[in-house]
Amino acid sequence: MMRQPAARVVIWAIVLFDLLFLALPTAVIVVASFTAGNVIAFPPEGLSLRWYHALLGERAFSAALWRSVWVAIVCTAVSLPAGTLAAIALARYRIRHATAIQIYLLLPFIVPLIVSGLGLMLIFGWLRWLGQLWPVGLAACIINLPFMIWAVAASVNNLDPELGNAAANCGAPPLAAFFTVTLPAVTPGVITGGLLMFILALNEFIVSLLLVDARIVTLPVLMYNSIRAIITPDLAALSVVYIVIALVSIWLLDRLVGLEIFLKSK
Amino acid sequence: MAEGRRPTALGRWEVWRRRLWPERALPLSPWLLLLPALLLTSSLAAALVVIGESSLHLLDRATFRLGEAYSLGNYAELLQRPVYLRIIGRTALAAAIVTAITVALAIPYGYLMVRTAGAGLRKLLLIGLFLPFFLGQVIRAYGWLIVLGKHGLLNAGLTGLGLPDVALIYTYPGVLIGLVQYMLPFAVLLLAPAFTAIPEELELASMSLGGRAWPTFWHIVLPLAKPGWIAAGVVVFTLTMTDFAMPEMMGGGGNDFIANAIYDGFFQLSDAGLGSALAIVLTALGTLAVAVVFTAIGVGTLGYIQSGSAGAAR
View 1: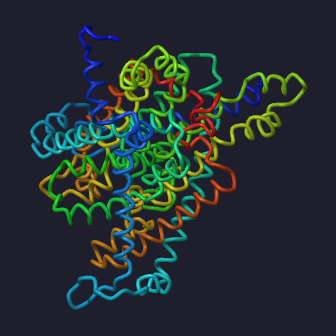
View 2 (view 1 turned 180 degrees about the horizontal axis):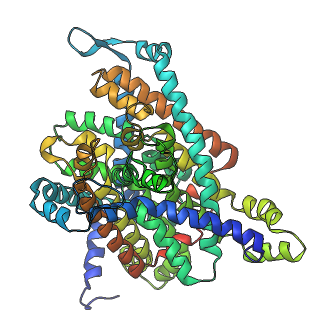
View 3 (view 1 turned 45 degrees about the vertical axis):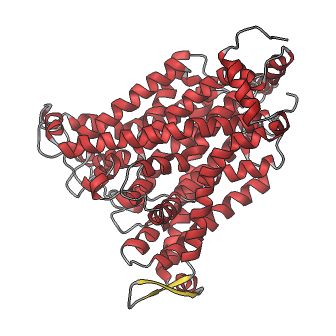
């Protein structure tokens, strides 16, 4: 289809629009963060680093950033083993009711986030877990776990099932086969899933909004609370921190497994 | 057999494995592997039960707590108040519009990303996708507020051209713009594997037999990419249907979706019963939509494992 000029023009026109559309909010945030003025205006009133400077002096922002990082660490630490083992079980073993289990494990995507958040808020409250940060990380893990299972399952599906049998035939006991054959083979999926879980937890908003109180707001909740009718540039500088983290993650993902992994058919 | 040989680290692990998990337990191994994920997911089943239970209790206006008696009164109230029906209609309409636009915009992007011969272009398209994908809704809504705001980039540009301002901020179309941009990476990432699975030779064959681009796309590429656009459509529809952040931040209070009404039920009306009833309705609507599509057309690229691939010959 790409060989026909008319089709090429249509495809390229839409793709260029998509690229612009996808990049627009990010690009304006970066531009706005360097403004010298007190409000965001176009064209910007000169360039400066004053809003980055202001950011450094604002304790509330850095405290919230570290809280979000901690939440992301808890989320990743719980999801890595849980998601990896589940994906291996689903893809390597014949399990009775495998379809039902797959659907059950998609529950985090079936239950709306607002409902999951409110339900977990009630349950965590009953368990007296509210007011702490680690339950926020646990909740982020619960609602995003399918991403982790997907990432690993894609790797397991690409693994030749005969490899495990070969290891067993060569006398490898089950655990040895697991650690020396299965686990290394799914490493790209584990890395991809781990990075996704970290980033998703770092950005997690609605469930955090329901689970935190004023003392332990995470960064997205703090930003949400700070956005008012007049849009000040300090939040733009703060958003750039997120943009830098996203860029570093993309670079890492590309170096470690290659972004093209997402194009592979299952 | 291996007596006298020093046990390796794995050998020692294996000894423990036999004590804790003897041979006859081995058939249970997959269940042991699934256990953590099942436990984590079960907390959401519990969440649904808790919300469902509280939807069956009416608010006691004297104490502002939920009463003891069971009742379906909250559901009846939802039906009686036109405001909730209006919110449900507004949300469903948004989900339909956003799904149609997003999938239409995602198909060329995913197609070009998979088919292009240029590795550099493919990388650029992937990065263009992942950068917004890795930024949360709050940041993206903030970016859109800067673009669409009264004195934002769009209006500055229009004024520069001598054109009148447009008011998109805090309007329904504004919310939809934010949602389409938020959903586009999800849609492309679910579509791309489906395009990869189509052998390029099929398209070339159609073209060399005199087929033109549009019929080739319509009769060959689109039907074969069905698993991809089903998955993309279902995900975009349900994510839009249940979204909170975009209508909250870009709707200016006048364009609430169901999720916002649930939140307000809990925290503004302090009526957890009514909020829970609406939460159950939202869950049911979302599940129904997904179930209809899945039973009618299948799970598409959404399944964790390729259909029939687990342990089977491939």
